[in-house]
Image 1 (cartoon, rainbow, N blue to C red):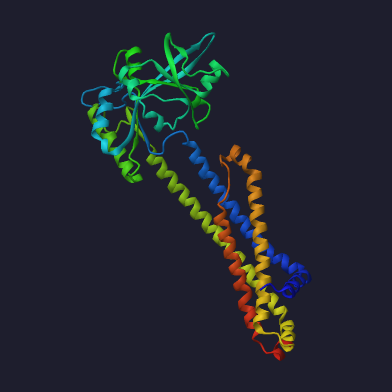
Image 2: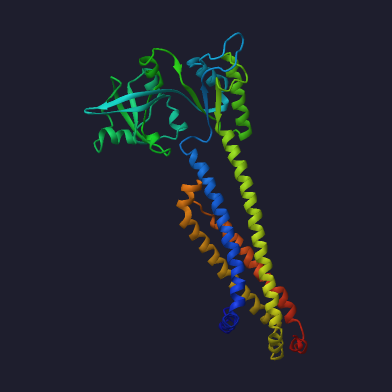
Length: 410
């Protein structure tokens, strides 16, 4: 039950001993402030890593090829490796149970023209599943589908900035676009979290590109998304096995990374996870040390305070005060100071993170540094409980002293 007289006594005690109260609060506030800043910076680093892969599926893999750097089975160094539909179908059939999405890629650079406006853009010839691998966001219309591939349709999906460049504010969906001399119908307009470069791209069916621009079955890359049910270690093992099998199939030296390589997001995710785990462990260690220092500081100050007030407690007991009321008053004062100081440290830490957030991103690639409220509140609760214990134990001891002994205390 709320006791107004007790609270008046608590505030009078705080006002009478301002320096002691400030020192107690500073210990707590500094501990929470440092804890908030440390976790905020590590959280910002985590956001930077996530942002670096924002436009790709987290379970993606890319099979890339170039020239050989090692001779193999009588074949000379410098041989140009070329992926074909045969390799694409081999991967699709051989690892069907380990693949969620799969797409081929063919890279082109063409002039796109609409009426009197024209410019050069990167064109990617892909399969329909590429939408999910690249996390393409369809704003208008649709993405490519299986019918477009089967009929080798002259259809195109353009990025948001391509639409702005060529059409401005006018509608583009359904219009005909001149692509390197051929007429394509715009069936979709997309945006991408990867930024402006990703939105100045256009997509066409891979079968259309193979028929019109080469009359062959060549592809530039194989992109796939592994089964999300696979663990990171299983996904890494799958990528390594696929890389070995493709090298064997295409007569490439087993150690020739230049000729054929698989970029596996599972490896990146595992590396980032391990790195962030180490950082968080360091922060928890340092933060825990700070909290322990805060706890020790509170305990020492409370022991000194209670020793200083021993005579006061003796007088209270002589006048009929119960030990529980003395203990309760000291504990309430300790918890009040700890709570207010903890909130001040949390608020100041959050404010500093928001204040320096932009400069950290520009100079140190720390994006949107922030801290989970639950973590800091948990740390504050630990300090409050510590303040409670720090006040309770010496107050309990002092409250049990006989009045005559307390009055003689120095």
